[in-house]
Image (cartoon, rainbow, N blue to C red; front, side, top):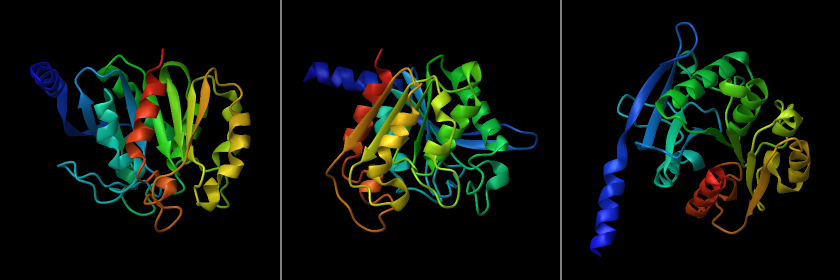
Length: 255
């Protein structure tokens, strides 16, 4: 028991309180971030929520939107795995509707994320991974096709990927065949969202042929209620959060 208490105390001492960062990105624009995790992380994960992506992070770190999103509600689980968590909001010039809708595949979004990646590496010389869920996968996949080397991420995690999109370009239609970085795909086999049907998964995996390391984690079970494209069901890995995060972190941290 004494050993367990000492280990718990050491882990607690290494943790840092969550903080809000306003990072300058483009001229006159800042990118608000909510940052949490250990003082000496094993890697950094930048989390991109789905939907319109406008979390509207307040000065005290509270969120005006998206608290139920899979990645948002699981942020402490990622931190508990020894990862620094950077939860990304819409930038200061997109703090009104439609927020990130129609913005995720623009040069401005790429510039914002480039600045976040550079900042994260300055904070800790560890790998920086972009992790998106649902429409957040359109952000991280597009950014990865536009940035490489020291400007780009060290890896990607695509969860509940947008595989079809009547309103725009889904992830498999992007230039992801040129990606030369590790890519983890996490998807629920019973995802009921029409733009994320598991039956469309083979095309995504085929398009990732150039990735030096790739895997698909196919989930089953959990709970499913409400809108099939929202986070309270299989689309948001409801009831499976701890398992999904643990398996994702283990894959990221593999040598």
